[in-house]
Length: 77
Image (cartoon, rainbow, N blue to C red; front, side, top):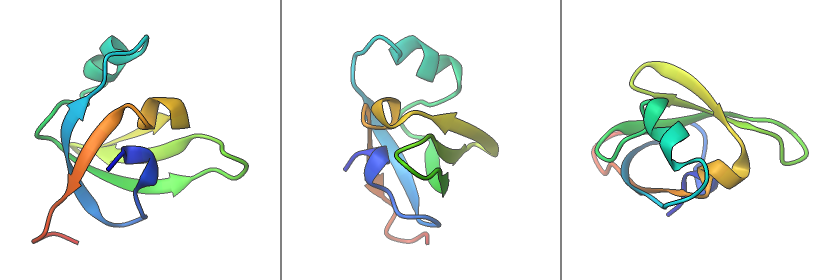
């Protein structure tokens, strides 16, 4: 599942990041495999998405969120 497909309020674990032009930017923002990610807000008209990662709120474009692979945490909601 991709981070761009997440539903609000459900916690997931990042399992991978695809190589892309913004790969290093995501790493520098603290988006790493093994970290917990949660969708906080989606802007209208395919605007940016706000995620909580390690207590930080990070806004990403849909294209950036599509490069992040996640899996749902079965014990966390």
